[in-house]
Image 1 (cartoon, helix red, strand yellow):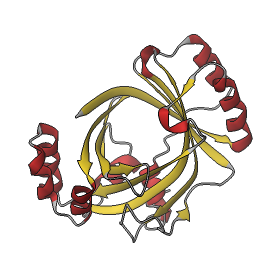
Image 2 (cartoon, rainbow, N blue to C red; image 1 turned 135 degrees about the horizontal axis):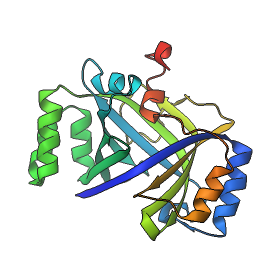
Image 3 (cartoon, one colour; image 1 turned 135 degrees about the vertical axis):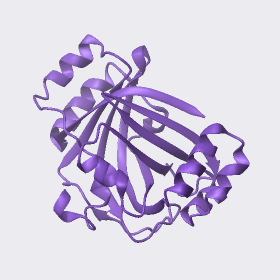
Image 4 (spheres, helix red, strand yellow; image 1 turned 180 degrees about the vertical axis):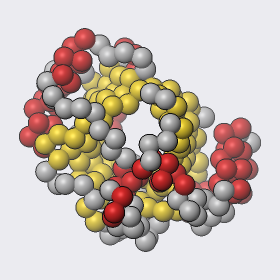
Amino acid sequence: MNVVLRREEKYVIANQEALLYSSHLENTLNKDEFSQNGSYMVRSLYFDTIDDKDFFDKINEQEIRRKIRLRIYDTSAEVAKLELKQKQGVYQKKTSITIAREDACGLISCDFSVLLKYDNPFANELYTIMSMECYRPKTIVEYGRMAYMAKENHIRLTFDHDIRANESNFNLFDKDLQLSPVFPMDSVVFEVKYDQFLLGYISEMIACINRRPVSSSKYCMGRSMGYPLYL
């Protein structure tokens, strides 16, 4: 089990701006392990209650809210990350556990009992939440990501592009999954994640963006076909 508590800021920038900022970061920060050969795939399956409570909590900007998702980086992966993200004031708490591919498929089929075999408090908590509140798969969101890291203060900067989704096929491991764009192709979501404060040179770079942070939820983007009036 892994627990991360951090601040997250998001900005929508043009593709050309993303190339400019990423070129600056190349000289000062390290790429994460997945970005060594360029951008990489991130694919997430989001769950929600029958009445979409988590979706509407986000739309209504509730102070305390959560998201539950399965995440992979390769459709041939034998494991998946099961994650719970909880908004707590200005911080995001992310708790995750790695589960076997077959158990991820069990969750997709709404067999939450597969979590009980892990003998883990977090797995037990999610079993209770997902069972009692009738969670169901809602959308798969996939995008390309380039990520940079600074060891100081656990700073992580990511550029996410080509954001696409599917609200009908929930096979997370389908290599031929049909996906539709849910975000402008000429734009990138730039995310800044850190523990308590940013290093000075990173703050200066972000100041050049000259934009206010935005509330840009990829889960909500993925629901844009079912809820077009809310986005």
